[in-house]
Length: 398
Image (cartoon, rainbow, N blue to C red; front, side, top):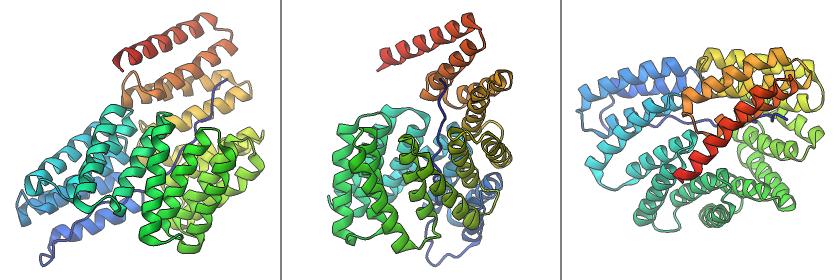
């Protein structure tokens, strides 16, 4: 049976750089970029960010730290728009300039981390690991092994390993990061909560539910106490705990947490932000499992409208929502309504990630199930054969 995809919302802060005495037009534009980005208006943010880059070059010279930050901003926005090739090019420009200016420093390490995160999103795990390790090594060299910036790199690598089901490599990294944060900030700090969440994800993935649940809960408690109940990080923790209950089929526990996360994001970001759409889609998935099909369809369609308007019709998040809406129709026996949604979802994933990404094989497997339920046995077998070929090619490469 086809699986529902759950989406994790991640608010990214647009990078900035202090230009000290030079309070020029570039900084003013950068503030506009930050505001537009936080509002989820990524296309407009990208347009202003490109202007800011041009102005920074004119005001400060082509080899100024502000120019590298401007490239970073552009890379982050392209990434949020699902434009990964453009994001990679911008991040590489930022890294190249920073290496010319500094050789090794915090900004160079951050550029390496940006590329690692991008490659992880693209499913290019070997490159993600390579850049993540370089960032970690540089931070350890610059700041020592117990610096919080080292913990950030550790958590990022742990997340990469968790995504690849390499839990034995992820767990010690998360534990070390947690120890660093506790030593630096004390037992109750937002970064401590973030690291606890990463560790809980690893425990959950390994089936260690009795260890994962209290850690998810503790992370939520810390964030509520330190940041207040209406902070976006609290909404993230509510979603994390809800994901845990969803995976345990404890839908009555997951639903109120997803609803709270949605309400918080609406209040903080407005009703038409991409992260609000993510929260809608996640809540819809719970409704689907509960058999509340009308509610689920309404939430999925609302999420899809926001995503298509804010992110464009070819964004991977759009593909995920299309897939989930298709699964909902399959559950109701509405196969003809589901088929074009799966086909469109597949086309978006292929365009975004290439032919061998995990999203491709997952979508194809869902389509094979659908074709079989529709009585299209030959079509189902052809799709399954394609999946087998992709997996064999992927195995040969690795």
